[in-house]
Image (cartoon, rainbow, N blue to C red; front, side):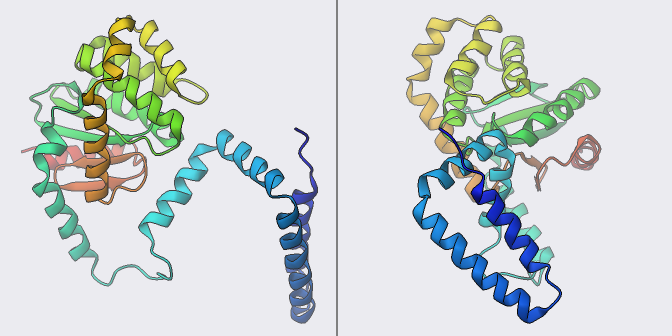
Length: 271
């Protein structure tokens, strides 16, 4: 399909119009351009939709950011909550009330020391660009702290491909239980380039040496749906609206905070 450059030209024209020196002239230009854009959008919805789709496929992290902002900031909200401490206390209470499901659920992948002194819980999506960059943080933390327990919670919010990849990942966990093959699979899929989907995830599982017949069988099990349902419900309960999202101790950390921040929080949470 041939994509017209006219929408891009229109957007550039709007920017030029808004930079006009005269306020009245700028308003007039703004009105004219808005009218032109509305007419074009109405007449070419499929073309605009294709442009948007192509962009978000190439840059899924942008869509993630938009969704996260929409979820965490209600319409019309312009200021931060009046009592930030109260908000932090509420989040801490939610973590405590759901501690069993967050830290010790049977529906989760666990790396590192299962009885570790400190625990890092990560909600992630295999198509999340920030999660991909944060993979190194997790691996470095495991390397530097033999007593660290890492819990992974699938949170596939970036489209059907993410859901398919998560289903394969759960089947991998059912077979290997957080062992070497499971970690190899996770590194291959999250660290790989391009979009993750069922085929890409199955290829990663095959390369990691897993039993592919069993993977296909386990993907159809009730455990897969139960795992996804629990993870997404926990994310909603904890107000984790984007990936990656972390839980350390009684604290919730939004976004790819980085190795140093995560290490410091883990040290604070260690008895």
